[in-house]
Amino acid sequence: MNKALPENIKEKDLFRFDKNIARPIPPHEIKEINDVFFNSDNIIFKDGKILPASFINGTLEYYFKFPRVNFNITKRYLGWKKFLADPFLLTSMFFKKKIIITEPCLCFTDTWSIGYFHWLLDALPRLITAEKYIDQTLIVLPAKYKKIGYVAESLKIFGIKNIRWVENGEILLIKKLIVPNHLAPSGNYDPEIMQKLIKKLKNYQTGQRLNLGDKIYLSRQKARRRKIKNEREILPIFSKYGFKKIILENYKWEDQISICQNARYLTSNHGAGLANLIFMGEGGKILELGGGQNPFYCFFSLAQKVNLRYYYQVCGYSFSLSKKDNHKNNLIVNAEELEKNIKLMLS
Image (tube, rainbow, N blue to C red; front, top):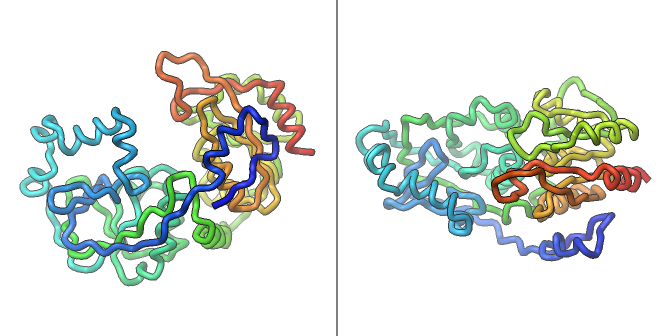
């Protein structure tokens, strides 16, 4: 999978992109697994073992790479505290309501799929590859997904009605589970599958179109983390060049789609909101603001899949006692550099 470089690439930043210029995409596979347990955490068990398909990228590699996360998963399902409080085997056999499902089931999610980015760009592409099974199977999903707007709306797009919502107090014993493989490392995309997904989503009828202009700044003001610490300082710059500040949490999913369908220029700091760039028209432009340790490849790659021109800006982190991490820390945006990049993007 080949990728061009960003429009405003600087030689000193090549290392942020060149390792991801070409990433191999594994072949599509759909496995049929017999006699498995499935619970409300999206965990799939067979013969007393957690299957790698339960996790991001379909592998346990992430959990071995990041010891803290690995420890939390291990503690939850294998550790002694979990054994005393709520071990899988004990709760499934004695406390949790075990339900036998004889009809074929389909699982296309993992433990990260509840997040907007991962639902839209990791889970739904897997569903595209298994679309022929939708009318032949029972879709299994954790019950906590039921109240999430973008989940409910996107399931309508696929015409999914036959869903088995798994409650916290339940565990399913599924006789035959169909599991499409993870198509690429998260943040990379199979071109053919992404085009099919984008076409399907863009054809989604949103009813009354919401047009808030062609220049949009997506603010993470209501997010728990990864905010722009000096947002007040840079808002006048966005306003000067006609950008409208939008907080996506204030809008229904179908309205978010409309906002981005009408956008010609879209900018935001690194976060799930940028996934909405897939709804933009070809030839639009993206400016991503990211931290110094941000690899940038997620939206850099995605922008190319929908024929958008991609720009970036490396920002500093605000003071924090914790380790600097693009997924946690707030950003400090250099206002002068931002104005230069906006001028370049609008030229």
